[in-house]
Image (tube, rainbow, N blue to C red; front, top):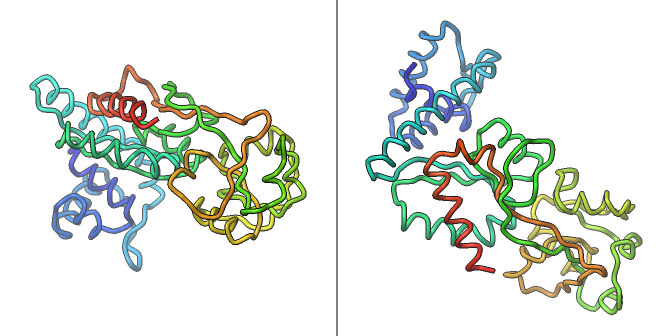
Length: 291
């Protein structure tokens, strides 16, 4: 089965459009249509249903998706290994990122990596822990960079020990607390980013058995930060993600401090492609310089 047709299928499934797939892969829309038609003829069933504004997978398309992903992955690994043997470093690496990582680290990492390996493409995807775990388990991601994931097997490469801190409006009474504990936040109006997504904040709230006065939730840490600055409540987040934001928000450490480890999750380091291993090496090197 032609891996190029399989790749066209995967991109069209991800983007929900033959036109978008054509733009991403460098083909015409009619070229993608012919490839999908040929793939459906070869398989003996329809993989896409044409809908208003694009396409969506049929039930059979959903069932065949993981198998075609394996074909494309194997094809890419053959290309990467042959290129590695011949001294031509090329390939594609899909990276899932914790939001703070994509904000603080990935621009510098990708800039350095692209200078070294201009023919390796890096696809970056920002998601919560729960989504990253699902994508890594299905091998739709080659690696994840962020906090430890739950309910999925992987190898772990530690990078950095980050601190969970309280975000308080400037002048808030708790900023004067000599020994701030998470329990002291229970009576405050609470703003929670990405609730129920298995974030480190979720884990802290569960581990400390806290019952927060949840008033607001957000999908963006920067939105949370600005809401705290506006005096709408308090929150918790990583110290790392706050380093480039300079609003009227107080960052308060807990007593004892609340730390968690950030690193690289990879399904199997031994099976990682040459391009993936080179990116892991670059990530470790760049993070060591940044911290």
